[in-house]
Structures are given as structure tokens and as C-alpha cells.
Length: 284
Image (cartoon, rainbow, N blue to C red; front, top):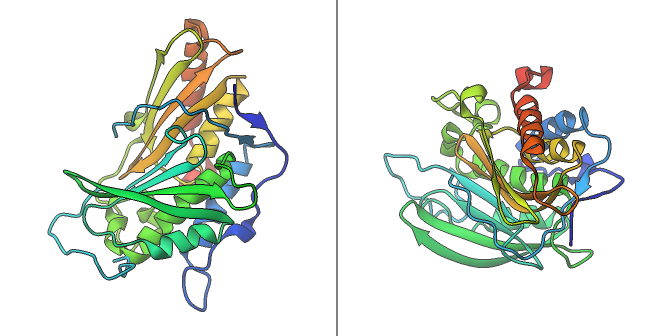
């Protein structure tokens, strides 16, 4: 069974994109903050190789890229979802911001600049607006993305593009407080916002559900905290929904479901890592 496997090397800052003509844009700053925070606690990042079982969906102006934004009184909730579960051969990336997003050509080009092959999969409508889905693979290998740092880079790239091309989204994104034109009116208390639940999901795995305040580098930190207690992430989904981050991971210990005592250890470990104050958090 495919699992997280330890790997040497880390993403280089050269992956950062210049989003502003003639200058260092928002994205290098966002990436630098994320990697700086992650590397303070990580020695060797893991890789994600996810099977094809379906994970339940987490409940949870682009100067507009093609001038198709719509002015409404109510700013919708931005959503960016990284889905490692629904396709065995590609990482599925889903983006939504009400009816304000266009073809997202600039976002696709930004992802391609990371060395990725990006194909627009489809669009679908929900009551909250239009959802755009992309199939993403590593250009050099032709396979889905299995590096948590690169997956986090994909998420932050999309958020950076949204903040640049749809500046009104900054009032609905946690990273808008530092990198946007308007900070969110609502302030998230991480102690109140953090919820961790673990459910039985058959004899061979458990389902870990996490909801907490969003921030750069969060996906990498979650994976590292899980791996630190020798628990394996088999598959999952991670995303931003407004000011919150939501994740669902299928996890196991020695190819078996996690017993109650180890569930408590996992819950306590994640609670500590998500809620602990750090110098980086204060500067962010």
C-alpha cells in the first residue's frame, strides 16, 4: 500500500514566482514565510503517495484574470482544495470564489512555472458559485504530486494569485491580514477554531479530521506532526475555506487502524503543534 515515505531534499526558494512586473511580488514573500516556518521544525519532509479510495469532502480584483469578475455586495468565501484521493494518477486542485473567477489562465501558468503539468478538468455549479477543477501532475515524472511542501506551494500559489487578481478576497482569507489590501474583519482564535476528530474507518485505517485557523506552511506542519509519532498518512484532502483550513486524512499505524490510546496521543500532538505560540506566528 502506498504511504508517506521519507525523502531527502526540500523545495528551493527558486520555485517562487514573480507576480508583479518588474519587481519581487507577493508570492516570494508568502513562500519565504511558509518555508521559513516549516523548516524550523522539519528535518526531512515526507512524500504523499495516495491510493484511489475516495476521501469524503471536508465540510468545510484578479484584476480579474480574464475580466470576468462580477461585482456583488457580498464577498464570497474563497476555497482552495488539494485532493489527493479522487484520482489515482493526478492531484486534483479545486478553486472557488463565488462567480468572480474567470478562466484562471494566470493561475494555470503560475502552477506550470513550478514544473507542473496542469490541465483544466471541469467546472461545476453549487449554490455558493462556480468551482474550477484542475488535474495536476509532476512534469518530470508524469505522476501526481507526492511532496507535502510542493502541495503546500501549489495552495499558496493559488492564494497569492487570488490576492493579486481579486484583492477583495483578502478580507476573507487569513493570509490577507499580512499580504492583502484589506485585513479580515473577523479574527480567528486558534484555540476556539481548532477541532480534531478521529473515527474508525475499517480494520486497516482511521479517518483524521482537522479544522483550524489557516496559515502558510500548515499542510507541511500537519504531515510532520503525524509522522513524528510514526503514523502513516495513506490518502487525504486539504484545503482553505475562508479563514479556516480543513483536512481529512486516512491514517494508519503499522497498516492497521489507530487504537484509542494512540488516537489520544495523535490528538494531543496535533493540538499542541497547532496551538503553540511561535515567533513566526507573532510576526505573521
